[in-house]
View 1 (cartoon, helix red, strand yellow):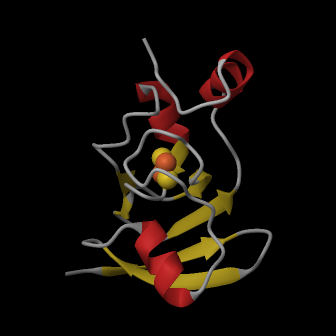
View 2 (cartoon, rainbow, N blue to C red):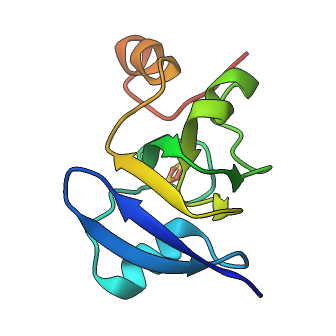
Length: 108
Ligand code: FES
C-alpha cells in the first residue's frame, strides 16, 4: 500500500489517502465536507478538478474519457500520485444533464 498527499486548493485542507482507498472515503474519515450523492460514479456530485497528479477511476461512468483526464469523481477515484484537487468543480457534461432532467448523469 502506498500513501499519497491530497491537497484541496482553496480550502488549504490536506489529507493522506492510500492507493487502495477512494478520495471520498478518506474525506469522510477526516471530516472534510466533500459533497457526494450516489457513491457509484454516476451523478458527478463528488467531482473535483485535477490540478496536479494522477488518479485511477475505471468505474467513473459518469465522465466521458476526455473529462476523466481532467476531473476526478472522488467516490471512485484512488490516487496514483500526490494530488492537488479543486473540489466542487464539475465537468461540462453535468450542465446538459442538469438542464435536461435535473437528475443523475446518463450519457448516451
Ligand atoms: S457521488 Fe455520485 S459520482 Fe460520486
